[in-house]
Each structure stands twice: as structure tokens, then as C-alpha cells.
Length: 322
Image (tube, rainbow, N blue to C red):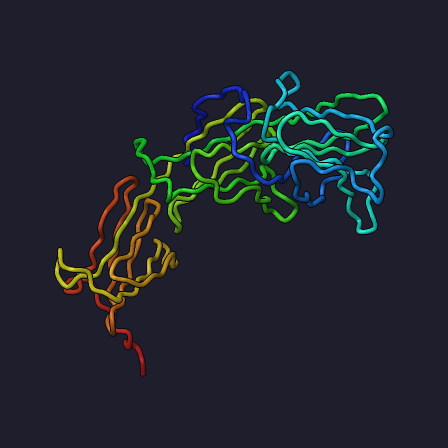
């Protein structure tokens, strides 16, 4: 269930809000030639490549700047710049001729046409530029914002961050009916930079079936904070000889949902897991005996569930055998 609210939107004033991430999908200005390009790594600055370094007199200076929106200030840090020749090389890839990272950057390049890609976290833009003998400046508008995700239990109870993760997908399904994964395993309250648009977010609490899906819109120049609500609880299972007794070691556990489908199997004296609210069946096996118990998970109510060997329905594993 999505709580359906954004706490607030605020302008993104600088890169200090963000951690740098590897480039992924990006917006483009006027060209789609970089759609399938695998971005190479960079050094702080890479001079133009070639068999012979060009004479300084033959170079032109280009200064590149980027903004989140058309009216926004220049991004001061956190950018990764890559400059490519527009014609593919023998390997089918566009040759990388220069790169830099930081904020506004200047390059000395031979006059000619180039493709420039600026990435800012998972946001980015591409533009074709022309370098002449006279110095000039080019700006790229990233049309990007930030997204910060969190989740709570019923009543606003906090979820331990270590048990919570998010995955961000494209908002639209592909021809195969699947959405492309953009970023997996995002920690709560991490700011992710993205191009503006609608994204499909999957919030997972634990690692069984407490999963919430939401569509969330990111606006350019703003930080969107979204909180989802999980209707789930943490459950600890143990097999005991008498109520309140010690857990019996070397117990094999199977958890079935209301339809009888298996959800999780594990071995140990205790089985701790997060389950979405609903009805479940536990099957506990110890040595040659199998015990079964039904129980219910109430959202936000963590509980210990005992399977008492003297009371639980024991199943004969040989029953029905010839």
C-alpha cells in the first residue's frame, strides 16, 4: 500500500545532497546516437587522443556547464563529462577523446564536431557541439531531480534500515511486459539523482513477501521524498516440547501462505522472518516427526510463534506409504 503522499518538494541547490553513482539511463538533446553506448571510466582529465598530440595553436577551447533546469544555476560538482568523436571507430564504438569530473569544465580540442555526455548520478544529457578556434561555452540542461525513499509500518513505526531496500525501475513496461531495472538495492533515505519522469519503485521489507510497489514522479530541480507503508511484521518461530520451553535445535522449517504455496524454508532452532499480514501455516520437522500449526500475522505486531510438540498436529511422514 502506497501512502500516496510526498512529504515535500524542495529545490536542489547543489551536489552536496548527492553521492556520485555510475552513469545509467539519460536524457538526450537532439541525438539518440549514445543510446546503447557503454560509458568508459575516466581520469580527472583525459587529453584528446591521437597518434600525434596536436599543436597548441590548432586547439580551440570549449567550456561545458550543466544545469538541472533551464533556469537553474550551474551544477558545481558531481558531474562526469565525456567528449566523443561523432563517428564510430573500427570497433563500432564512438572514440572517447576527453573526460573530466567535477562541475563546469573546460577542454582544449581540435576544431570540429563532437558529442558531449554529462552524467549526474543516474541523470544525464547528451548534446552535439562544435569546437572552433575561438573559445565558446555550451550548456546542457539535465532536466533532473532527486528521489529519497523511506518506509514505515502501520502507525508510523520505523523499520530497521538494514531490513529495508528499494529498487527503482522504468515507469513504462517494455514490449515483453517487463520494466527495465535502473537501480537495485537502494538504501532508505538515500538521495538518487534521476531525470524527470515517473518511476516504478519496489520496496522490500525483509526477504520473503513484504513487498510494496508504487509509481512515483520525479520533478526537475526538486527533491521528492516519498514514504510507503508496509503492512507486515517480524515473526520468530520455534519448536518447543512445552509452552515457553527451550527451542529445539536442528529443526527444519517451511512456511506456507493461505493458498498452501511455500514461501520460505530454513533450518535452525529459530526461524526469524518478515511476513506480510495474513494467514500462514508452519511445518516444523525435527528428526522423524513433522508438526504443523496455523497462525496469523497482524501488521506492525511482531511476535514469537511457538510450535508446541505436545500440542501441535503431528504428521506421520510414512503415512500412506505401502
